[in-house]
Image (cartoon, rainbow, N blue to C red; front, side, top):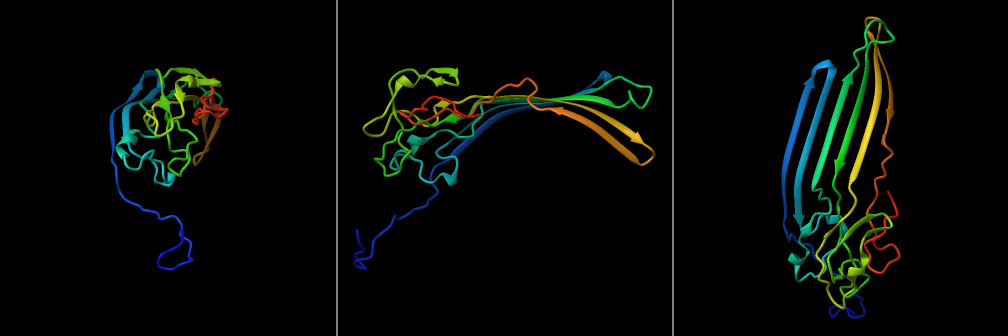
Length: 227
């Protein structure tokens, strides 16, 4: 349409920005540091948490399924991680006697955490913005855990209007990683110190997968195609 004030002038989109919605975060955090005998030091932490909001990132633009029902988008935050464990272990080897045997240490860093949520959407454009309308869910949501079929896609179907599936209901893959290092500290004279270090990242070669495809009906729906 054209402007009523300036006839012949085309109108563009009118953007409205407002502060609406809320977010909550609750967590239990436990940490411990222990220096054991024989040169072993352990530093560990565990977090059990839950984060809820209406919209996690302001940079995402319009993401609400129904702008007249903002509470309908309340769900897990995009960055929610239900549980996370991390531990650092350093062991000073009990080798002494000369320059070759003194100063050896081994260390490991272990990280394990749960997955982030995935927001399933359809290609519907009833709101004028793609990627905002969620599907209907017709049965129990089953996480299969296979990269080729992370969840059962058969229970999701595009709706004629707004779908009944909540936001961020499906949980993606977790993260599991162990790094290992061997180092030797040396004293060269009164003022010079040197350190030799060898490191192995992802010691057990454990794959950490990305999120599954989230668009209903697409060839990659429910499949993981990246790490």
